[in-house]
Image (tube, rainbow, N blue to C red; front, side, top):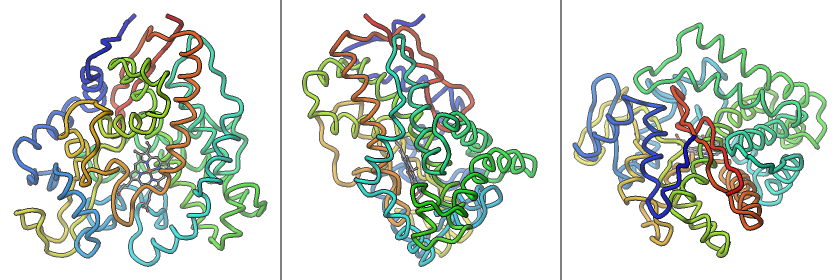
Length: 385
Ligand code: HEM
């Protein structure tokens, strides 16, 4: 059992353990490259960018950098999910699909969705924050694809990890058997979504997508995108947020100053970076800082290095403009689900804080997840102090 509370520290020890358990070799390599320089060409990996300003320049320069070329996210995902999944699209088609999906992520739509999905959450003691977040994130995805959240929450998360668990930084493509496994896992969610689309009931999200003018393929692609992007990031982030609050003494402070929640969440996102790298392919000759890059090269943006350059967890220090929300991306692919992610994060944090005010928590057990794509706790168990 791990008491695990070094209140007053910056939470860095456990954060490092979580990162290393996921990527024992790639994490130290990527972090060390930031010391070598802001842009470094690494054989078999690509051009690694560790600086926030340069990262933003790459993400917003759509003439020279794309998500659809060699070594890009499209190379990874298209064989699994098909060609129209936002995260493997570019240009006018991409912008048009995003425009049509925007309605699903208005503050009102997101608040309704999270309220419906969290209705059956219970805050018992002991409480595993990983299991709780997995249940909420899975229920949200189930609602999004038109399934009963009580039945589909677990399959939603399992499908996402079955796909992403096979990806590694130095392995830009999946093998045919990995593609087959990933497709089968995802089909458990996309098939019911197709049924909901055909039924056209606007209470379900696929039904709404149909009334928004999306084709069946676009609707299935959007569902796949939500499953891939919207579960593991949250199941990674929320327990790491709660652990950081314990380790730094901020849980007690937040319990009496709840108005600081946004600062604390923003700073925890900067320190944890649930989506630690972003990939692009060079589509036209360009420069990243002083380094000339050629079409076909792969660019690995180390968001984690760019964000961590500011230092340890400190919600009292404002973020400089070049870092602003970089953990949600920048430019045309900026995270579409950010409002939904924030609503889910607030829901779990509010519930943990309310129970803490009632009767303080302590961490009784925690374990980092091994061999996963998105660094995370395997469990983070709280109980009454
Ligand atoms: C803390 C949680 C989350 C983080 C840190 C996060 C981060 C990101 C990042 C960095 C990107 C851009 C990747 C790139 O440009 O290569 C992205 C894109 C995206 N995210 Fe999130 N995300 C989170 C939660 C969610 C949720 C809950 C959803 C919705 C279900 C979601 C849906 C999307 C979609 C659809 C895209 C693709 C947008 C596009 O390509 O146009 N995300 N996310």
